[in-house]
Amino acid sequence: MIILKNKWWVLTMIISMVIFFSACSEENLEPGIPTFVSLDQVTFSTNPSQGTPLQNISDAWVFANGVTIGVFEMPVKVPILVSGKGELRIEPGIKLNGIATTRVNNPFWEPIVIDNFNFISDSIIEVDLHSTYRQSTIFAWIENFEEIPLSLDTAALGGKAAITRTTEGAISGNYSGIIHLDGQHKTFEAATFGAYSLPVDGRPVLLEMHYKNTTPFSVGIIAENLSQVIKKEIIVLYPQQDWNKIYINLTDKLRESFDARTFKVLIRSYIDADDEQHTIHLDNLKLMHR
Image 1 (tube, rainbow, N blue to C red):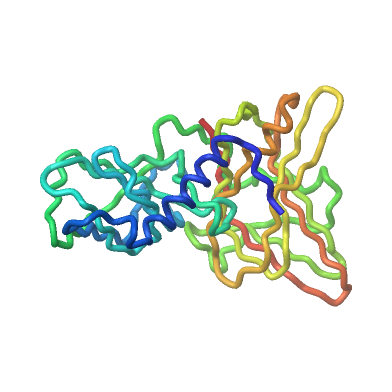
Image 2 (cartoon, one colour):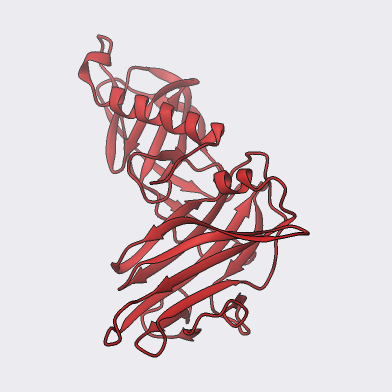
């Protein structure tokens, strides 16, 4: 069970749940003829230093003239009781930690703002949505497996399995990372070679990643200070047949570790039976904060 202690994330998710469900209720619509704004998907682009543009944008947080309309899972036609020229604002949303009840507007993405949107009652208006990372986003670490040496260290932590590159089924680029677990290699444990200074004051910190796996694995952090090194698990990711994009919230565990000087990303897995064979594929890992 994931306990979210950070006030920013908790407040955002409480608001999202309230307006998500209220947006679906006809009782909350005032009398009138709405404009229907059709939202299909949000496209995304990056520059070469920001890694892959592939995202998993599930929701649209919709605002009209500064008023919250609701949180909607796309594709959707959003009824808005506004007519004439006004501001339409869309903030791309995600399922934090892959959980449908923890919907948040991603704080690292630019909102889509149309200042002079023409709201036309009793009409369906299609809106093309495109976003990028905010200029204030800091990428502490990116691993896309396109270059060697890899930035994940398996030797220092005592695991038996290694992570290597493969061209088979890469979701983007030419390579992805692959981990083989079997009777001779039952454990995998890797951490970033780099140790990073990350915010511990509640500012959002996310780890983006693509993965597919036949056995569970966990993602966490290693908190380091002058006297000790502490491993903290954040989430367990269960088998996925196809590539999945997830946004892992590191904020709460970092806040617990306010006395740590630096942090590493930690990935672990193990199997029990000697006759089992499993694989874990990873790609497009991005550690970001502001």
